[in-house]
Length: 167
Image (cartoon, rainbow, N blue to C red):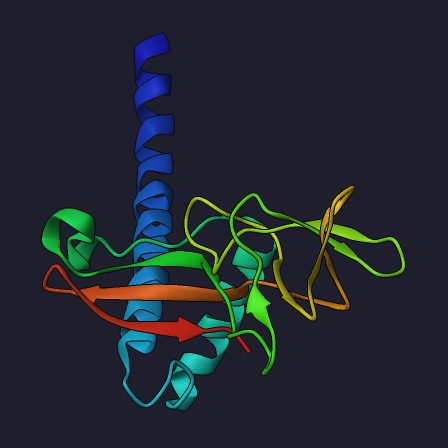
C-alpha cells in the first residue's frame, strides 16, 4: 500500500519534471539561436522576450540557460557569459598596469588591472599626465574608470563565433 502511493505520486510528478526540463531547454535553445544571429540577438521579434529574460536572469545571478540539443561544450554549440571585456581607454589615456597603483592629484588612488581579462575584475583605470614623486611614486592628473561590459561568447562547432554585448 505504501509503495503504490509512492508510485502514484511519482507518476503524477514525472510529467511535470519532464515538461519543466523541456521548458528550460527550450528557453536555452531559443536564447542560443537568438544570440547566434549575426544581425543581433533581438533582430527577430520572437527573440526579444527571451533575450530580455536572459539579461534579467544574468543581472539577478540566476545562471545561464542551457540547450541540451546544442550539445553544450561537448557538442560544441553553446554560449557562455563573458563579463571582462572593456571599452578602450579614452584618447590621451592609457590603462594602468596590473597591480600598479595610481595616485591622482586631489588624493584618490586606484589599483590597475591592465586591459582586463578573465583573471581581473572591477573597473579598468585609464590614466594620463603622470609624473614621478620620490615619496609616492607615480601621480597622475587624470584617472578615468571604465566598468566591464556584460557580454556573451557564442561558440559554434567548437569555434568562437562572436561576442554579443548587452547595451
